[in-house]
Image 1 (cartoon, helix red, strand yellow):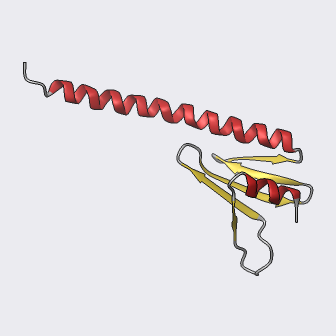
Image 2 (cartoon, helix red, strand yellow; image 1 turned 180 degrees about the horizontal axis):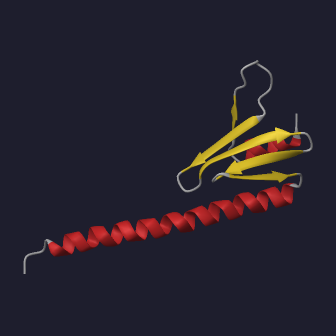
Image 3 (spheres, helix red, strand yellow; image 1 turned 90 degrees about the vertical axis):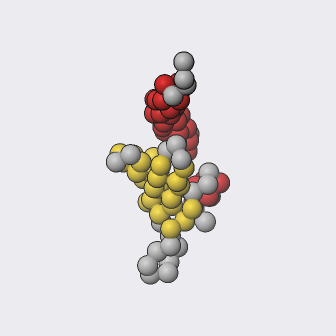
Amino acid sequence: MSMYRKYLLKNNFWPQSSNNGSEPNCYVKHEIHTGGIYAYIQHRGVKIIANNETQFFNNFKMLDEYLDELSVKMRNETSDLMKIINRRTTSNMLRQIPL
């Protein structure tokens, strides 16, 4: 079993079944904050596709740092959107209070 396969399964990536019945080379992770992250195991490394960006890693430390950075970055972007939505909702509720 590939070391990258073990790493991806440990980090909640799910194997995508292949058409020919062989062992899958694509692993998928979907979260609310990060969206879809696709990992393709290749010879001596793993290719990560997230947010229309492709990165290749052959080092576990760099891969782990990238996935952590991606998760934090996406949470911050989402939290800004949630702040705007909450502000609009609060504003609409305050306008409906009779004076």
